[in-house]
Image (tube, rainbow, N blue to C red; front, side, top):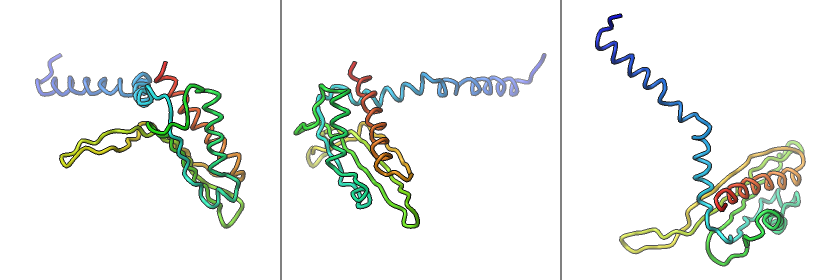
Length: 171
């Protein structure tokens, strides 16, 4: 069958673009992005644990900095006992709990964020200076009627994701 040269080129190009995106949607491609996220946790022996002061509604519901620190400590003790949480320098593990009560009913909504920041040196013509770079982060938004159970359940999920990635990176 005879095809004009321009049509032949267009057909070949269409075939190339038809099969080119396949590796982008392949499950192994998605895993590579997650592995690079986990790889940023490699070689960490301890964290400076920083818990942001919870919102006023969170405090009234019973969510305190001390309780959050205790939960983080318990999960690390159970799953990563070799990692210390009171390091004086090095990477920081930052936990933020935002919880708000709706005024019209007895429902709460909130967001919990867990992040790992590593120290870096920023090279600058006026002079190099230390800074932090976020290397791992995960957040969840939620709502419901039981603020305490929801907050600590979601914090537990986020910390378990961190533990999984930490273990991947440090096999």
